[in-house]
Image (cartoon, rainbow, N blue to C red; front, top):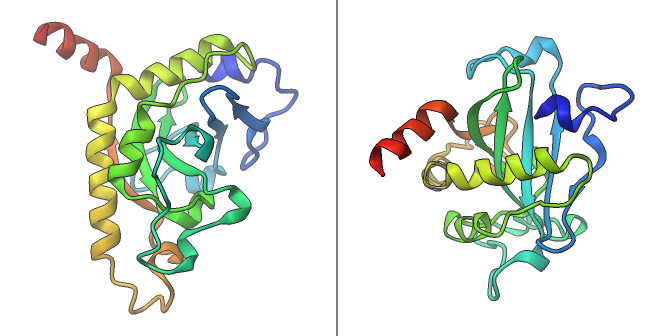
Length: 202
């Protein structure tokens, strides 16, 4: 799916959003992009990867009554990003297979911070089904988030617990801006095993 989505990208640059300007669905207000970190930071404590997808939902796609958290101060809101919410990131290996799901601290994506209870509601609204840059890649990513929704829900709960328990005494900055806290929860995945488990359960 990575090769499918990047088939029309003239050159792949680390850190850049691919495709340029991200993928945005004007009906669901879902958004995503793919990017890679340089080799010296790609291999890390969580495992090697080629790159990862970051998935989002914008406020026009939210259920009514959802507002960003203000419990930890104004730094959780980023009006220039229209209060966008990061849902989950999908790590891809060098063969193009998804191998990991993870969540991030607020500063990583510049999102506004929503509690797990809200982001779980956003997950059911993530859907990209238009043809650009690749219909197959758009549908694949949308369905992957559906396939792993219980797992992502657990990751979001773990994310909030890590944020609540994080000690910022050494950083001397709000927890959402602490560069020592980047990945807030993570889990390895195996799509073939997941499908086999679902078939066995059915």
